[in-house]
Image (cartoon, one colour):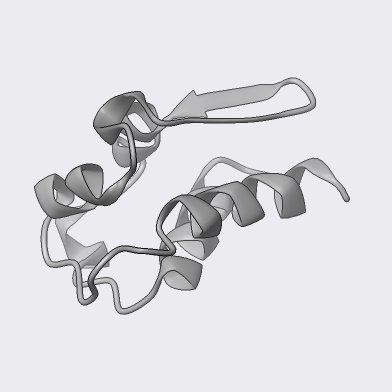
Length: 79
């Protein structure tokens, strides 16, 4: 699995139990198991949910699924 797919999988997995839609950045951070400190790592890439949250804008919300959150984050991270 490449870095993009691994990070996508980790984000999706971390949000598997989240209640959607997620309407705000604060709701998104709260949905991660360890909040802003939830960490995804693969290869040379490592980021916390708090760091990943800085890649999002208000226009990205609401999110309807964990897959959509992961799609946007890996795209914005340039993976």
